[in-house]
Image 1 (cartoon, rainbow, N blue to C red):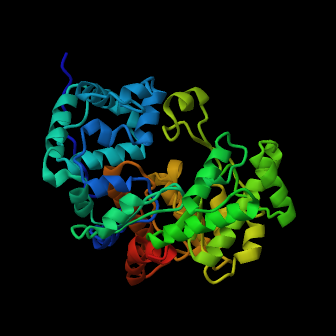
Image 2 (image 1 turned 90 degrees about the horizontal axis):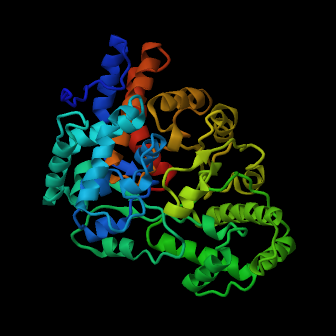
Image 3 (image 1 turned 45 degrees about the horizontal axis):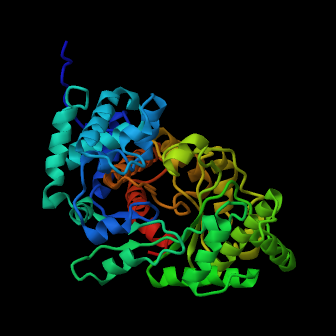
Length: 473
């Protein structure tokens, strides 16, 4: 029996409060920011896509393969990652079409998730799809998207302009020569702004099997001997300067915890020597890594790179998947994290330094009101990062606002962070945030906790002025 084909429709008031009075004002607040430019200060879209401006190959490689939000839930329902093009070198058109059919046939598994909201928005507003994905409509939708991707209007640069992106940050290895960024900056036909982000995690983890090789590469990129600890720090500082010269505004850090415990310099040098000979223990490596994160904060206070931390993720939780498909394919899981004592050494050292700025992200939302907001409520340098990863969802964003606003208001938050590899989801994610913030502010106004003119000022700040200020944009 053929299933009924159902229309794909987006309600104009989606995510807005249901109370009529609150919804009216929320709609007005949202309408006032709906078309504002997108500021994206943390994400993972490759600069090469925009530098080369090569048409996207097919619907699957654009919408499914790079998006671990999409892939992980399909995997949870028994779909192999190889079927979705993850880490596959010979993924031809027929394989791409089969993967898209799998997504559409499993459309029901996304009910109630933010992924469903983002996918609905992408399909409808970017590609003009009017039928709901299903086994019966998969090929029709695939062909419609493929037809769009074959036109100039859907090349990367055209979509960048259409999405209204003003600033897009990438995430980059310290040894990257940033050639794609330099090509964009030198291109007279390019008017956007794509900035690199310094991500030194792999160079700060001495217990990693690849650490010694990575450190050698770091030295080569910096033109600096890394035979001793002082040369290693000099190499890191040199690469930070190179990134700043090429437009970087922030340095991002993601480790198992948020600790920043400094060592005596003699001890740091000793542990570095042990790490370079491969003799370091796991406990010693952890101590050295925590010291090095402290050093990164000290450098941020000197060179002005905004320090962002995204701690407490158990990376590659399922080792067989990581070994077969690599990192960042959806098998990372959040863990509990502590910030107050972990960050005390760093904040005691540079927390009131004029150039230091620290944005704290978490997937442990119990820490928002207990630790992160109180820290931001005292230290001029500290800002509360927007809900991240498993928390960038409607109800979690509402909880975030309620958890932090009573302590720090709105001016000590980061602005929305999309943190995505899925290029076409960027406008959908920012639109979701704007709707939710409009709803939250409208509720405050109707409860007479905020004046209407203030709500309009705040919603504009959250979209534009706040991320520009926090990230020195």
